[in-house]
Length: 340
Ligand code: OGA
Ligand code: NI
Image 1 (cartoon, rainbow, N blue to C red):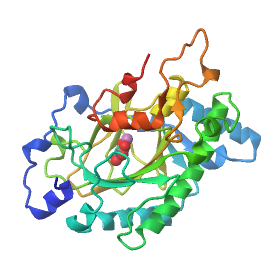
Image 2 (cartoon, protein in one colour):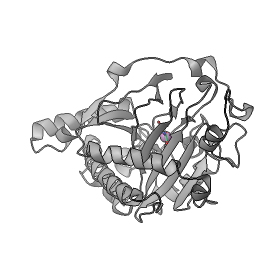
Image 3 (spheres, helix red, strand yellow):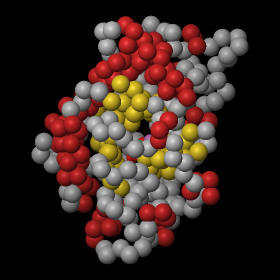
Image 4 (cartoon, protein in one colour):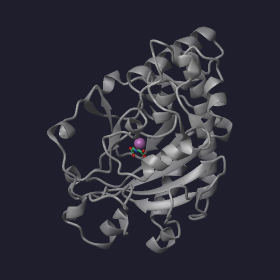
């Protein structure tokens, strides 16, 4: 199937083809601007050697995970130069010819490198205005060898991402009253799965008629996301859709389904979506950091009790990804399939 970028580049599109038209309900179309309330976490405080500063940041982190499942991370130590290079190299990847990109068209969910369009074209009737490149980058690093330098840039960027996640998981473990390395050990994060997803949302002649990525939650423990100069991410908070805007050199972080399972629902996986725009192509780069693919994930025994019984059944991370990715991406979170 032709990518959206190819469709836009090869024809003089004045309106979107009917199979991309995404019908929204009035609730889906109403936006709430609550940007001022979105939590901001300072990574340098979270990893500070000053115990007071650190414990304050841990408290803020716990509150952000509990109340929002989402926060903006600043002072994370990933350089702006590296971030810009990832975005530029991603543009160069999508600028390759369709023939070159087609080398990476995969057949299977667990293909180490996969280029594609929409979300799951095998089951979708309405297509999403999005092309993507997905790579499993940990415990084994996989990335395309084209364009030159892309692989090296991604390797450095995804390694830095793991350092950030390490600091966040320590803070999250402590915020739950658990030992600092609890989540890393229980989820075998040193063998953890890290999936890089680069989303390319071409400029659209009728942006309000299509969807980039519909409402969904991410699998895994935490997702780090950044994008180029064009916005498009929206999160659902108390049933309302809120567009989110980054601070300079920040990451958007959201908790994933496996954080919700592990914490027995204390830290909820945030529902989010991506809309497109008529100004230009939006590129977003996300990394989903999860347990080891072979880990069985269920609620942590320390977080369940007589008054708080286990709310999810344990499932192997690999099987969960399979369940999510072989179906349609829709409002119903894949979590509903394993809720007790
Ligand atoms: C994702 C995602 C949002 C965006 O890739 O899972 O939610 O803004 N992306 O591209
Ligand atoms: Ni997502």
